[in-house]
Amino acid sequence: MEISNYTFNNNFHNNQSNKKEANSDILDTSFENVLDVNEEYEMPEEYKKELDEKMSNKKLLDGVTYNPYTDKYTLILDDYGVEKRDLERYHISINDNVTKIVSDKPITKEYLEERYQKIQHFFDTEYYDLRDKVNKDNKILEEIGINTPSWISQRDSWGIVKIDGEYLEIDADEFKKHYQIFINKQAYENIQEEHDLGTYHKELNGKEVSFENAKEFEYYVNNDNWKGDHINSMYRKISLAVNLGLIEEGDQNLFYKMYQTEKASYIFKDIENEIFSQSILNSIGSDNSTVYEVIFYEYIFGTEPEFFQNKLNEFVKELENNPEKYPSSNSEFKFDGNINFDKNSSEEYKKFITNTLIDFIQKQKEDFIDKYNYTDESDEIHFLIVAFDKLIDNIKNEKENI
Image 1 (cartoon, rainbow, N blue to C red):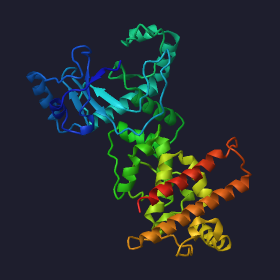
Image 2 (cartoon, rainbow, N blue to C red):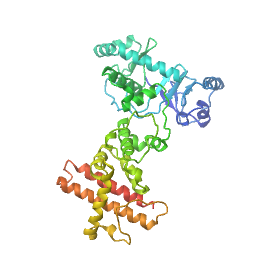
Image 3 (cartoon, helix red, strand yellow):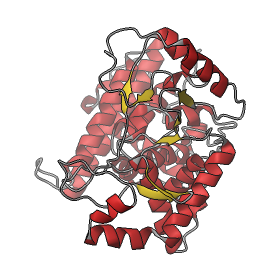
């Protein structure tokens, strides 16, 4: 069973971990009624001494905390998300998108590697047998030392593994990651090449993730808006941004390869327009990436370097033929197909180019509507129309920063 969590005062926070601050407010304890979480708590001296002694181990991984009350080490992994598992009447373990490893032993890199091998060995040799036995008769749980609350009449074997001959219930997210890796191994798939499983494999083995020459890549990978409910969401978004040339992949080793690299044009490597670039990034990050994959690859930027520029050149002619239709034509400047500007460009010129891009995207939206005879919100392509509108809104919002 998962242990209750309590938050203690700042003095205790500072002593609990000499590692990542993000985990310094988490303490696992079984004393559910001893402390009021709203009151400050001063740790007894004997526990402080034990805490200092345990945390002096230089091999402990960053982020590891120790609880002297339960004699447990805890590590919250840099979690990129797994699919949530709803609590059903026969389930105890649920996924909360936070992978927590709790251990009697110091959590070092060596420990994680051993733990990974032991849990995978359990899946390879005993998982199916245990699952079938538990599904047939829940009394098997009592025999292996797993307690089931009285309010649950039946449960499955989810979350239960065997480590060093002892059956344990581990964190549901850790179990889910191990299970997915196990399933893919059965299908003889390369774990490292799978974007989600490769990431899980690194996490569970304590392997260092590097973002060398990819600081912006690292920033967006860790951006909450980009993460979504599952790693696949963030993976698709970051891949789209890389393929458009908005973000440098550098020498990052989080992902083995980007998604749909055959469609990469890296068009924004030749575009100097921070307003438009940021608008595209904001659009990718705030919505379902699959929507913008369609819009960007097929209708705006294409998959060939000349596609977008050809579109802009066509719009130059459209402005010449129908200037009254587009607000951006009411300007002292004339658009020639070049959307670049830099810090030396005037505020007026930046606004002109931005307004022209808004008109340009609006024209692409109208062409899309005409092509598919879109009529109302009941149409199945309505979500793509919304994507065009949100992109226009994002450009307008960025224009306010000029």
